[in-house]
Image (cartoon, rainbow, N blue to C red; front, side):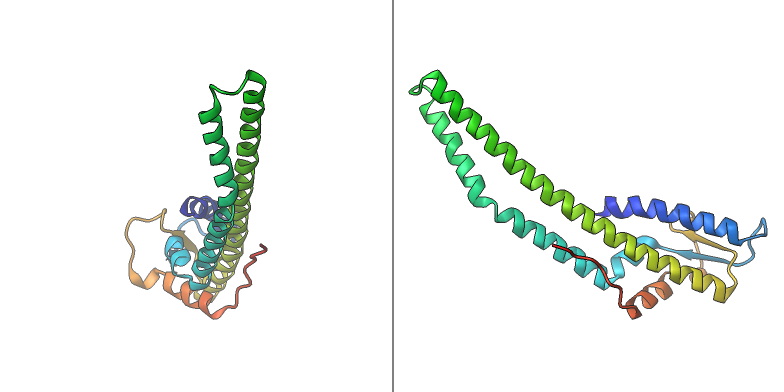
Length: 181
């Protein structure tokens, strides 16, 4: 999950950097703000609840495939136990059936995983868009020339850290996340 967040944070950094370059006309910024995107994602209760719901739903869906998995296991045991008894043609039929069922099962699991990943990525984008709006408003209100993220600075003063303000603003919003199951 955090790999996905980092991927989108990378894109967010690019967007913010471009915005900063376009907005700022001075080479050296006088007014600087910093944000910690990881902290914003981790502290957004609605987003974390959504992620938990998505992951729980994924796990429930995969667990619902247990009967299918048990049938595959039974077929494997049958192949193992009857390997010496069956003629080559019958054994090949069982092995082919087993392989087909394994492939179908894996396809279902992969589909569930990719659907989950897609839903998480879409909702990360929604949250990032809201963060960009808030950062833009804060930058305009405070006349900030430069806003950095946690990967762009080593140490900061609390008076230029905008993270908590962004978290508070996000909590006030009623962000509409998408969870199309």
